[in-house]
Length: 225
Ligand SMILES: [Zn+2]
Image (tube, rainbow, N blue to C red; front, side, top):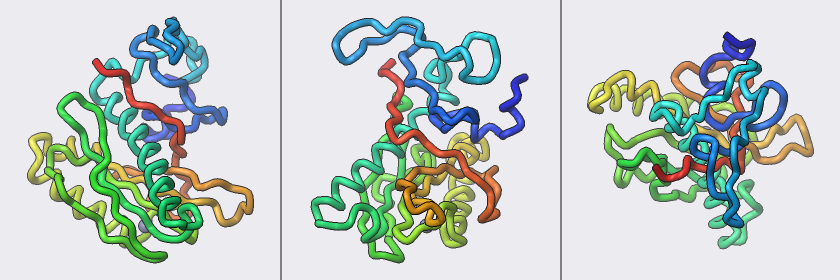
């Protein structure tokens, strides 16, 4: 076992900032993949990615870890899409209003964004178009005024979806345990902090003081199988 294990699974899966401050490198689909210029990237394995000396496991080689990996990438994509639509409106980045999207898994295991909803400073009405108990992976929204953690209402919404997925999905409770919510916010105690993405699931502490894993804003989905 490694010394990161006691941080809980939410820290050591997906594309989260590691205890050493770095994000995991993008998966190349088992050690080899095509780079932008057509070259082969072989064996780009970070020897300390898990704090052990063993070979790094490719998160994309296992459906369970691939879902975390792809969901984090979809969250990063959502942030970019919120920012793009905010710019279209002439907003002050993500500070002018709340944005929301659900995240869904397709038949290949990739995670995609549902319809994006634009709200106001303090609220947004989610759009559930296309949602089923079996495709729902989670949801993401921003807090324009700060607030790194989910609000009470956010957790209430999460719990409602959790119960729905646990009861009606083919995977039951194990599927519900895959649900996560992402919050995009800046740390208002640090004037220079950027809008960052943080992730929470049913195992997360609901204390507002609990630090949550930060998702790589450049996260990318697993290569197509
Ligand atoms: Zn919220």
